[in-house]
Image 1 (spheres, rainbow, N blue to C red):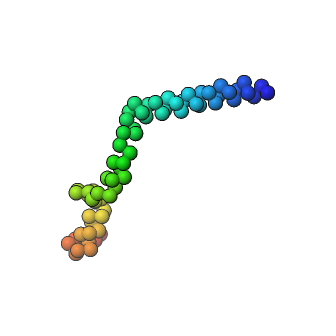
Image 2 (cartoon, rainbow, N blue to C red):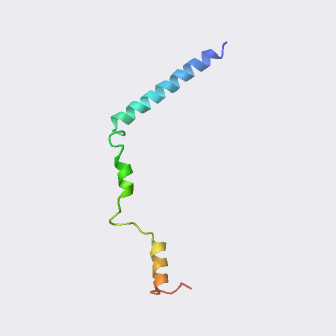
Image 3 (tube, rainbow, N blue to C red):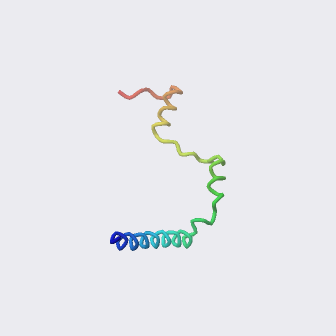
Length: 69
């Protein structure tokens, strides 16, 4: 029965922490645009970022450069 003296305050503290985290996300407008990221995934990127090693592989495939020694 004495374990309840520890568990009840711990559970209240965790609940309060969850409530504060939720209030923080609402105030920082985390839930404003829920559909935007879903639509952005479907759009093509006008300027795709290509890593340097991928550019080098493309050059090698086209025969523009040779393999480094």
